[in-house]
Image 1: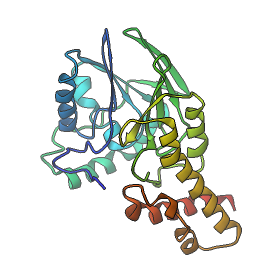
Image 2: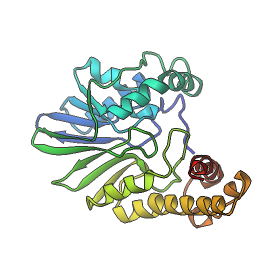
Image 3: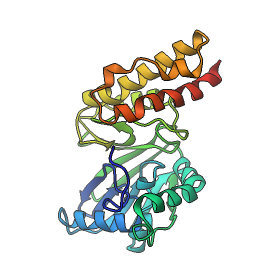
Image 4: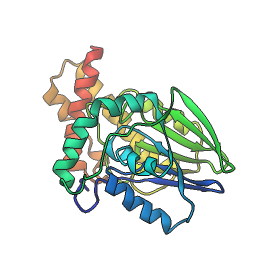
Length: 268
């Protein structure tokens, strides 16, 4: 598992860039102020157009704590209202965690800068001749996850709703049950290309195999344990071997099952 570190400055994720005639749109600004500066340097190797819009696709630190760097340079910051609520609730804990993982020097300049434009369910943007649809998921990896959909090119920037090549993480802030219909709503758009929150861009078929099928298996097996009156130890021990090919399986599989059990037991 690639953890946040002094070397990556909290940027242990996949980010998106849309270059338009009016400027660049950045999907997620990095995990720290210095991490955002690092992203800005990479962007300059792609385009000389300034970043005019930053979209926060979710609630994890690398989805929003670099906002300040780009806002100082005039960028609009956009996120779902649920994401901003999540940011506000978890900001202190995330900043403390980053200082531990990235180091005091690495987090220097990082502040909780929240989006100044929000939306509830969806938002249509036409910027620089590129049509974008921002669609709130209703909660998946984090409560404020959103998909950024480009209908003309049929590209979906999914944020942490999709993990490719590696096992997704189910945390206390996740909604393991709603994650499935959230994915299905994205899949109904029939994207040709998926840019995930973690991993390399790929196809909907690959996203279904690495994320959706895993979630279906996790929910189904944990629910079976609960229906049979099983304890949490039984939930943790469910069969997930079909997904051993995913990176981080050993670190996350049992932890995910435990969290899924704790969330789903409220239905019983």
